[in-house]
Image 1 (cartoon, rainbow, N blue to C red):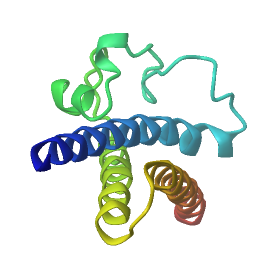
Image 2 (tube, one colour):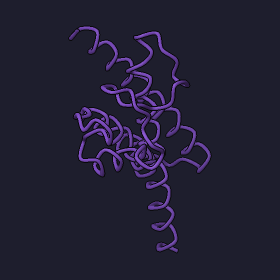
Image 3 (cartoon, rainbow, N blue to C red):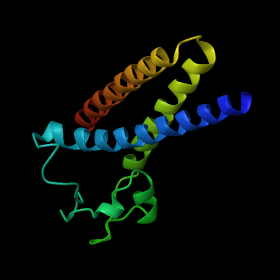
Image 4 (cartoon, helix red, strand yellow):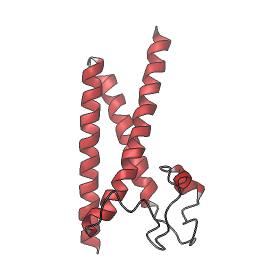
Length: 139
């Protein structure tokens, strides 16, 4: 029984981590495009330097940046390390909140999931807002 509980804990922790890095990838799009009045839907992800579209197999959160060694496949100019940092932070945030709530609160599965998702998305939204304000202050 304990092995099953541990396996479920690991599964859901990884699930929230993957969800977090995906949300972090979307946050990067929002933080870059919204202050500039650009659409978050179109055009698809592209290099901020040369404008070439990022290929689907290169557009994996964190892994794509590492695979390309932080450079655009086409123009070879550097892509900011902030992109994988935001993605990784969101993955850690989502996973960490799940583990925290699971370990320290006696919640039913439904409440655990709901609370984790609510707090995770709230934290992601606050992170995006902070990054937008930071970018405006720096420029």
